[in-house]
Image (cartoon, rainbow, N blue to C red; front, top):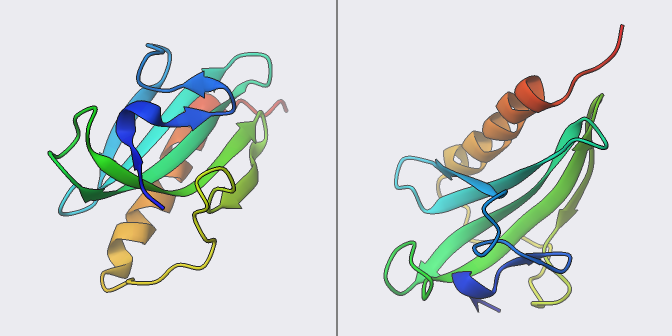
Length: 121
């Protein structure tokens, strides 16, 4: 089930109305976005990834599907949840014609991990 980008949340945190959340456009067609927010308590970050589904591209009224969300701590990514229970997004992915788009998402996560996760020692 798609939701409007303006309704996108991580927990109770509305992403577009919180300036702490940053965004990275991902992929050749920029049809995927990765939102992330620093989490200083964990020396890491929280993240959520969406895919464009319809409407004006990347406005409040853009329809998106949540692909995955997660959290990274000081030592790297700890948890990734595929799909989204609240929006009834199935963790089963279909329509994967261009796997490079998904590879790019995970590469961007790896880049963010190198920047925001500070392993001791």
